[in-house]
Length: 70
Image (cartoon, rainbow, N blue to C red):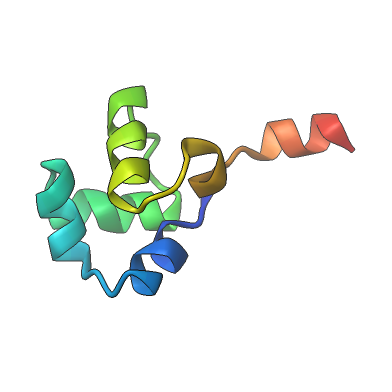
């Protein structure tokens, strides 16, 4: 899974720490999300998307779906 969290976070001038605080997780969780090393729960994905003023679909890119659409 790829994410665009870092891109959206930097557009809003948010640090990883601030985003983590906004969604109620540790900074390490945000790091892992940005690296695509952690699959979030639907609730966390939704909370991150809301904090970054976008949608879950814009933030998370599932490679299996991309291949199926090609």
